[in-house]
Length: 299
Ligand SMILES: *Cc1c(COP(=O)(O)O)cnc(C)c1O
Image 1 (spheres, rainbow, N blue to C red):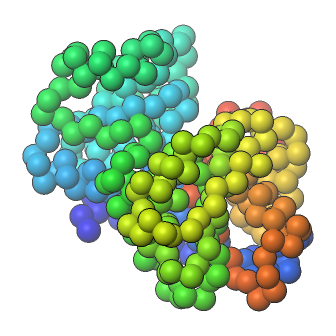
Image 2 (image 1 turned 120 degrees about the vertical axis):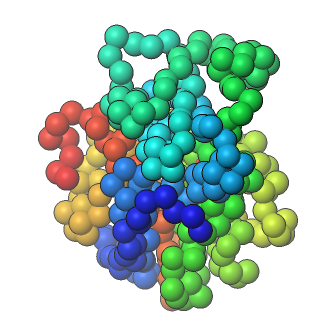
Image 3 (image 1 turned 135 degrees about the horizontal axis):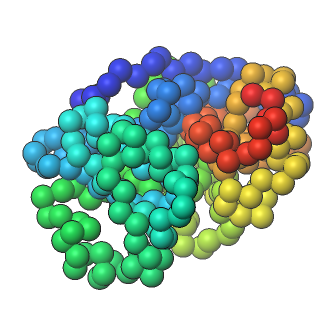
């Protein structure tokens, strides 16, 4: 693997919290991979970066909204790999850049703002070489796609005792990470994804298309999105603070808090047989908490 910058070693932390006491729960702390390229974003990007280097591309570009962790990670990783980077951003440029976009720009990413209509229309994007230059490598939004899945498959290689787990649980946005986890998991392990977005029938179908073994079982639960993407009512914030006080595990409002909350609820509902051992994937994303008011979180 051609890592353009050093990764920190990634701990697996055992923890017990409220209902989480009745089954064994360990969490893979991908949030500690790297201070900037934290969490699953690095894993989803690595194959794209390798391809860009191998194919001598001038630069690498991708797409995202104003709060895109993906663009920040890409900007940093591209700079470390000696590649130019460009972010095509959904919506007009506001008076003030979001924290995420300001950070991406500070790593040298060129930001190009396009209207929501143009962003959604591949014809408009593809026909404008000033947006998508041919000699650049294009990474789909969120790092989805076969290369993103292949990168996510390497996540479980960080777990020395993988066979010890009966279940693996992770957060779901595009489902790219979940697909990679399904492909790398052992045959009898049950894979549970907790969606950060409201129910979407297309999501399970798109995960299935990326599976090596089309019979592989997985579940995506849509019961824990708290009203939708990035919605974070007081109940979620309070859960995050209690979890942190009990375990020192920080979570983010968009993905990992909802995943842990969902797993906690599943355990309370006796979803897991006695003797189950759960591996939870902490996929990072903590910078998303910057949109909260100071003091809302205790970490
Ligand atoms: C982007 C992200 C996800 C979602 O990953 P997908 O591969 O799009 O499903 C989950 N957790 C965190 C922290 C993320 O930043």
